[in-house]
Length: 124
Image (cartoon, rainbow, N blue to C red):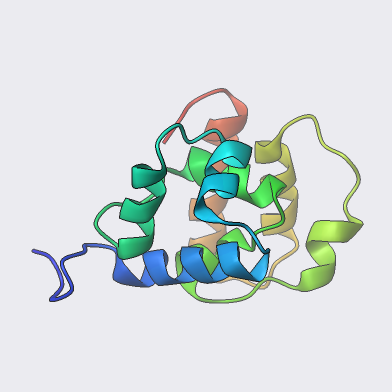
């Protein structure tokens, strides 16, 4: 079942577009930065027709995006992203940021499980 605007993920799409604009990226520039080969893919995400994978979102985190906001509509504490030491992988960085956020136990466990899977090389 889709929404009346034709997308399955309209809120995620709106928030992803908002973050892209907040960071000052054109669709083409963001695609290049996060490794998306076809800009149609990003347009599909932003329209809500499809959603990015968690792997795609982790790449967007490296560009400075607030992935918690994209997924849930809740903004992360801004200082978390910039004040963290370098990590071996974006997934480890995400796991560190998740552990510092005020989330329900259920949400934190879900996001940590995804981060752990990604740090082992799995894609969602």
